[in-house]
Length: 193
Image (cartoon, rainbow, N blue to C red; front, side):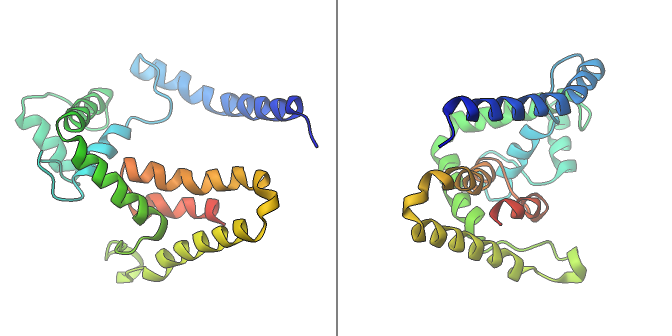
C-alpha cells in the first residue's frame, strides 16, 4: 500500500501543474480586466440563462441577445461578455435564488437525473443535419449503468473506485446547478468512459 505521504506528493504535483498551466491566463485576465478571473466570465450568465431554459417566475430566458436587452431595459449600461455583464448576471441569479429557493432546488434535482440519463434532452435541430441525437444521449446513461455494475461487481475494491466515481458525479452535479446543453455535455463523456 502506498503511503498517505506519497498520495500527498502526487496531489501536490498535480496542483502545481494546474497552477503552471492556468497562471498565464490569470495574469492575462488581471491585466485586461483589472481583477482576478479564474477561467472565464460566463459562469453567472450560464446560471441565469440556464434558469431560463424552463418556465420561471422571474423572467430569465435562454437567449444571449434577449438577456442583454433585458439588462438594457433595466437601465444597465453593460456590454455583452464583460465583467460588468457577468456581475449583473450574478446579481440577478443570486436574487432569484434568494426569492425562489424551492423553485431552484427542484430545478437542480430534475437536472440531476437528466444529467445522468438525459431522458428528454435533444440536440438542437441544426446539429448534424437535423439528427436529434437520442442514441448518444441514452448511450451516456448506459455508460453510467455499466459503471454502477462495475462498482457492484468489485465490492472489495471500493477505494480504487472513489476517484472515477467522483468524476462520474461531478458532471451531473455541476450541470444540475448551472445549466447544460449538448455542447457542454459531450466533452464530459470521456469522464464516463
